[in-house]
Image 1 (tube, rainbow, N blue to C red):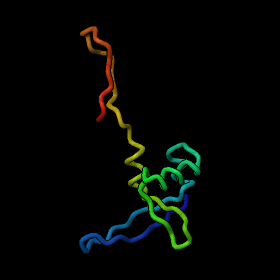
Image 2 (image 1 turned 180 degrees about the horizontal axis):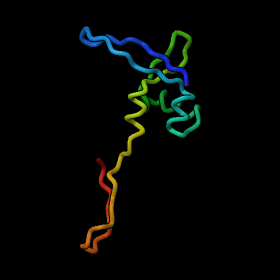
Image 3 (image 1 turned 90 degrees about the vertical axis):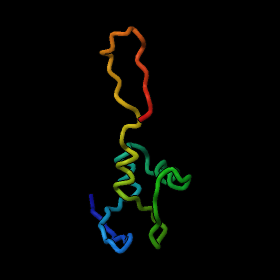
Length: 88
């Protein structure tokens, strides 16, 4: 993987972020690069475009999306009720 960085200014504080290509995002999310582009254009993935029109994504945004969206359910409850999933 090639590391790309850009400097962001937020309230006069500089911090470094790693930018990913759509192919790198596709590998992380285990989807096709075309799906990544479609999700970006639909607004489902935060992104920005290079002057040449290439999509770029912040690693921290993609990692946040990749996190599980549901709590882990265990079957160690003795109540006899079926296990349910709750959004986290």
